[in-house]
Amino acid sequence: MRFLPAALPFRVARECLPRQSRPRHTHLRPPIMASHICSIVPPYLLQGIAESQHDVPEEARLSAKHSLEHRHTYTEHRCERFAALAQPRAARNHFAQQQSIVPEILLQHIADSEDVDAETRARARHDCDHIRNVTSTYKQALSQQEPDAGEQSFAVAAKPEKPTTSGFYRAVYDAKKTEDENKLPGKIVRVEGQKASTDVVVNEAYDNVGKVLDFYKKFFNWNSIDNKGMHVLSSVHFGKNYENAFWDPTKMQMVYGDGHTFLYHFTKCIDVIGHELTHAITEHTSPLEYEGQAGALNEHISDVFGIMIKQYVENETADKADWLIGEGCLLPDVKGVALRNMKDPGTAYDDPRFGKDPQPSSMAGYKRTTQDNGGVHMFSGIPNRAFYLASVAFGGFSWEKAGQIWWNTMNSGSVPPRSTFIQFADVTVEVAEELYGDDGAKIVRDAWNTVGVVRKN
Image (tube, rainbow, N blue to C red):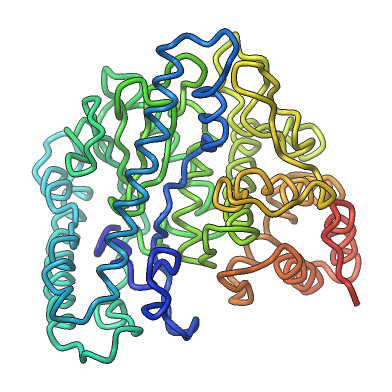
């Protein structure tokens, strides 16, 4: 449920701040939505389309370039917002109130709707009242904050009580082709409990979000995004020919473009939706900075849960699954099978119009780079393959053992925000030993060793 925008970005995004303003104590920084856009299509792929010297229509080139520019603008805008939170109380009080946007309109719509049952309406009325109370509490805490308490969290004072119901709310909006962040989420089309829309894309977003939330609840006992029944908002038809889908941490919602020449069907791909929603869940379990190896692990975790959800829907065991992420997002004439291949990184696509899949399959191909936030999409293939190897070695369904290890790792409190691959690997081995003994630990360690993430004693 959206009580506060998660609640507000209190753990300041370090990369957006001057050095003297950066928090010094990691343990005082509570989880927040990161300053990046968690998009399913990596920037290097769009860059390849924009700069392609091959037979790429000019319209497609311009569309890819436009998507990149939009991503850059969003990131800059978000960095400005995070930087504002590092200012003294008097300087940021007005800013914080402006950004305390909660979906009261959505709740009121549900509460007043004749298309939903009485229980749903009652829950909506209750939550609407609760949001107003939480907002009031937050403002009171903000006004009482001491000037030197900038590193501490208001989230403690404004912590929402756990909902009395275990259900979740979904709402899908039509962005009407806008790319103006201030106009999101758009026009409401379908909310929890309402019948299907005449817009197929709306129904795909609604249904697949539901499948993702059901998966998390069934196998990991996790309630929505924040484990407190947070509302999940989605905006479809974003931008003109926008070839991407992303989780917007400022608006706390999913956003889907319609695609264009090469990429489309984002709402149809359950693994894509699982990937993006997992970015939000990660911020509530083990927040990872979106840069370098930590950022690659952030992407990796989203791929892990995205692929498990896909395999669950398709009822595939680890050894029978294809391990392809975004399989349905490439248009038929593209030379490729998916956006990423977890089983065999670097083989997902090879099209002269936008390049070859750059993911290495082991640390032998790892190198430092300034592109893609330090290669967060490129080098996620290394831990991805480790998870694939562990899943197959355990046998059965990926979420039964390997998935449980990764989930417990995320919730262990032992993964630092700037985690390296080996740090993350060590925790997975420790968790595997706790859950499945020495044999389980050996399976996981062998998987990491195979991809070159090796402990040096």
